[in-house]
Length: 269
Image (cartoon, rainbow, N blue to C red; front, side, top):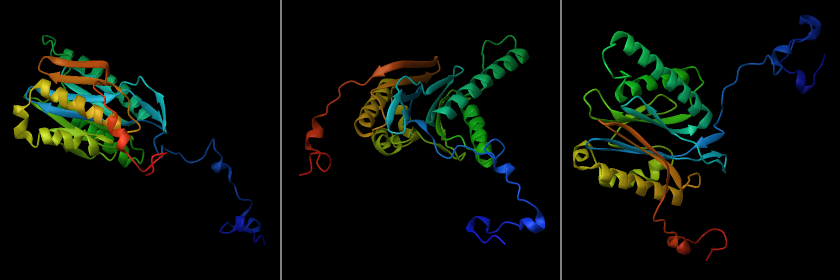
């Protein structure tokens, strides 16, 4: 009898016949899903104001610690009432982009078929879209094949009120006047919450104030987040529609504070 460790726990060949390991070959082996993201995007930040929502994300997709792709657009418009900002795995973001495009086409065709006299192209508002995406994420999580992303849905609800909510790879949802993913949840949220503590403060915030706060947060993230970039996209959703300004560049950078940082590199004292 074979007593080598490789044979432990296997049925005896002389009793049950030779062991068939063909199903373990790579071509016919068990199905595997993504265990961890490879190419990733970092923070997405968003803030409500009295007429709508401002959302921003930089253009970098990192391959591990390598700043590999510098022109990735992570803000996806949906109809005239929503922008979807996506952080996390870029391949899953590309899947979501195709998914949202197909959904928008399907909704447009269905809406035009049932309401041929109406000009609105898509009937889903931001609240509807967020609910839909939360079910998609939860279903993928339940299949043990999650989408490795955290998504912010910004736009207007059915009453044309500002709407902002998130969904993560577990299908968990959360709504607040200010939201951020990735490092932004730690670095940008304290800045935004000093500006807007609760929903009552949203009515006091103008579009210009919200945009200035978002730009400040993008500056802070570039200072502190090694996976960020100084070029970003800025989106605004109001009753007038969706506007996304691409290839914005950070302004007013000041790196003088770095001279006083000690504890790494050559600055150890």
